[in-house]
Length: 381
Image 1 (cartoon, rainbow, N blue to C red):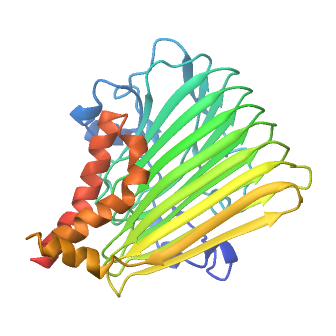
Image 2: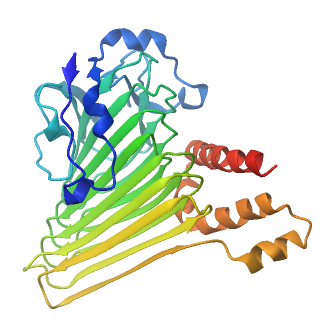
């Protein structure tokens, strides 16, 4: 059993989270017995997959490629340092550390599936380090399946180290969680490497997702396209940071969010250009819809530019659906709630496009969206 110390909302990077209640609880450490209580959904039974149940690797549920990568457990805490991660606050609670080494191009996607046994009171802290060899190509899909246990705290980190000329696509879907959830993704890129991220998060009772990209080699590029959905009284806190540490690097950020009911959502975006990062090209855009007057969205894009020869721009909006568009659809015999659904789905289309090439992911993303709008449809009728 472990007591957790949480960061204060007085800290600038944490002022939109409400994690204080976690400090008053006593948490249990997961064990391997949880794997026997979990079954892999049929949708994922035929894909190459790494399955963690309560954060612990389950060989019985996993199916790794026969060649091209290795996966093994590691001892000790995560090795990378960060000011925005959560793991520094839990000295007595061990991380469950793993290493995925991609040694050659993977011709099929590799899924990392996080399952829950249903045991309450767990503090689950998996950390996965992903290392790619030079000139490899890979697609990694991380899925956090639905957790209805409000007594679970999931606190994970994922670290990518991309070698020269390697290319990695990353897909991340977080289904609704009733407990507390913190997820950090950090990417370090060598020269001419490419990283493309696609994310869909649906929040939790307490929630934080943090993405940090460090472009360490020239001609390295990174892009992230994300969607967040907040409803009921859920929190959604999305942070992304692109650090241009050397010349001729490029980054793109596009995040779209929808807040409904009494949800509290926040976006924190950063582009940091170092003094020697000439010809850096960084773009950041965040657009949000607020569907109810009781919902809240804060958007905080920021730049720290230490070189003159750069191209950087941003856009940030918070708005509502247009009444004239809703009225137009209503005059075509479309109920208002369904019209709201259609317009909101169109608003998210750019963020959903990346999932369409991956049918299993497209189905899961659609299910998350349908669950979000089904609640509103029920409330509107």
